[in-house]
Image 1 (cartoon, rainbow, N blue to C red):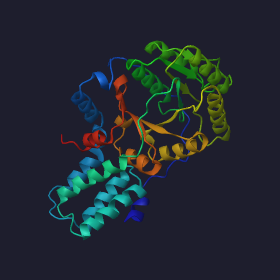
Image 2: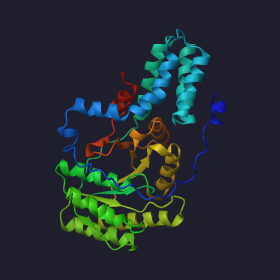
Image 3: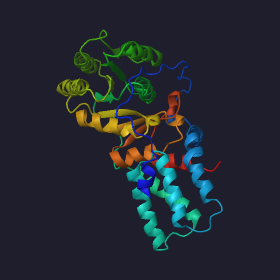
Length: 344
């Protein structure tokens, strides 16, 4: 069954298109506060609302197929399998899920189509629970290296993360080490002014490692809690970019012991399986410790979240579900699954 549907999957682009990161025309600094200061029910409602495309995509298709069915037969399983593959859940991941389901059906442990929906929901939730420890944001300065190709919303994500940490009482410093992309330094500086967070920068075209070095020195002198380092995002197939990232990482580690403490890769959910290719290549260069998945509100193929978690076995730290500051959300697997499987 799997092989039949592989042919239907659009060919994956081996490299992301290089494009300028989107500049927000609206002002996302309108939702003052983070999860700590917003009622939990309101946060779930917002997540459910922003995940509407995914819920109305593959989840709704699943429900339509299950509606009126009185038994679980091979045809039903094949149809559901197709839906999950086309939802960017990944061939390997879907195969793992349905191998288990077919065994349960064969043993008559699973007979009711409604129970099948519940079981699918449970399996998806389990795949999202990648073993990890939460970021403690210590010692000080705690250094976060942010990587990813252009166009994924990297700089905006950095600003939202800095804002979030500042709201939690942290003293944050931004480092503009993406000196290659036109206007990248200016973009981060603009964000810094908007959220009142200082930015260490050099002129465009400067050595990124030199900027990182100065950023670490400034963090130590100013007794900063957290340093977030922006990096270049040119095509991930370019060897020189990967070497530059390695150099930045080495410079940081010489100034701050065991740093960078967290390496976050920003991935665009709308790019589908190509996001996994990006994570693999960047991971080979600097070692990814966490994922930020952006633009989840813009895709009906939210299955990519499951595919990334299952194949990469790297924790998804945050998800981006909109332009507001609180729309950079700490990822909660159970909450995420509840939001996409929620009844209308």
